Length: 426
Image (cartoon, rainbow, N blue to C red):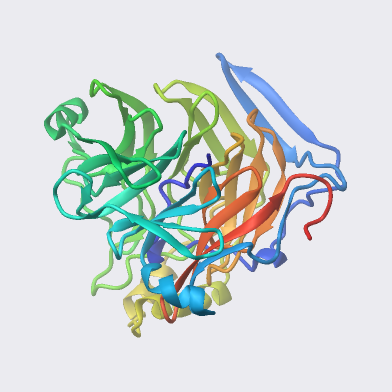
């Protein structure tokens, strides 16, 4: 089973393209001697990666054309089911190769054959057992049990692959708030990320007394991640900083080009939680009970944001919002700031083997992205170009994500073959 990217906002304000993927300056993935420094600091392993470890001919590769394409309007099969593929949330794969996804538009779980043919829907809108208000998270557990977590702290429903409801439970919101209540902290509003054992991670906002966003300057809200277990005990996963915003008067876009923002993902055996503030190429690996296991670092040169980058970002913002924007207040605020640099990383995901994938950058039009792969010991293997800007799931031989046309809003769920052997893709 693969695991999803977590804490990756899909709002346009969080877009973080750093450059055209194929043209980005980065260390080559082959032909260099591996260099990694490992040291111990009070029982915590620190892994400093300087060059990739893949040798010539041993690097993984990703196919250039999709093997799975669900949605869009290309033929009769798509026409029969494409109207269902919109506002797609989590995407995963069942053991028989079928693709399961949350449709936030339809407010149900949809299952498709690999051919793109519609297989079945699971759940429906409502407030009873097995019904959803706004399904937010989808998990596929061993045995193809599908778990659906509703929006905020709604019901959690377990289904078998045929859609039969196995069980349904509800979060004790009172016990949750009691476990997370602290001075100068707002109670969490939703499940940030569910874990396979039924526990879940929430995000609590730390609110300093009298906090007022600074005018015209980037700011980041301090937060704390907490894992909540079945007894409603809370385990802190550290204090972090949410994504960058800017407060403007008169109002302007609150987003920034290439924002820094916290990223979180879980996976591996034993289960680990990976978190980064993305302000440097450093990822912290925790146990589910909050113990820091390892710190992963990678050498990365800073990349400045150019005037051309900003203009392209503005164009994409307007394309996404569907309206022209008055940039005057935004331009004045940005002119007063030091030159911006791009964040060294923009997303995290753990694959079915327990390898950590780090999204270094992606294209503003979301047609491609660049990922660095780390083995379960934190060693940087190399970097891959992936023909998707949004990646949801990575199995042992498949990468699955969602492509969206910014002008029409049409979405297509695509799967690309991942080759982990030396031979090139067919």
